[in-house]
Length: 263
Image (cartoon, rainbow, N blue to C red; front, side):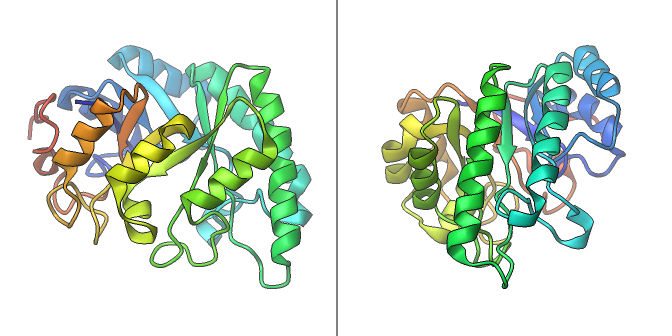
């Protein structure tokens, strides 16, 4: 089976965030990710990773004001300096956490910004960020997020748009972050799509659809998908980024390589 990681922003939310590292390790995970590390000192997070023998596999660049509904600022022409400062902050955390991949959330296009200007801004910001990250040996991932259910107006809502951006930026360290949940909503045909896109995929995430819950609660045949990921020779991490339909411990039947945490 693939190398599975736990997204601590969604799993083990029965306890406070800093307690989730131990539960992830107890459940059998060797890697973790989460949306953002910036509310905590980097040395505190790196200490938890060391204590529990976990690998930090990914986190996102600063997204702007998340609580106010912003979902990334890379496409916003009036926030370029803030975006670049966020890249510098993310590099500081990545170095402390020994994290080799960061994800860039493209953002929601404002109504008063043309599609052309939003795209041009996105290309320029991703080009700048990829160059800065390359100096540190860090890969920049770009995630396609569905615009039908979760994020209406999100600039990168299909894998095709991400590939177009990757081609335009033309940097060796830019990859597609492929989320099975989002792409099932937007595109479907997951196994065939994985086969076609594998050379550009740097990271995979998953949840079932509809509902964004654990495997077995929706329409995706995860046994087939996980077997295809292995068959294709994908060597990266596959992160559980779902909202458990009940307790996290009761949602892990799909995770044959681990064991349940104690009640």
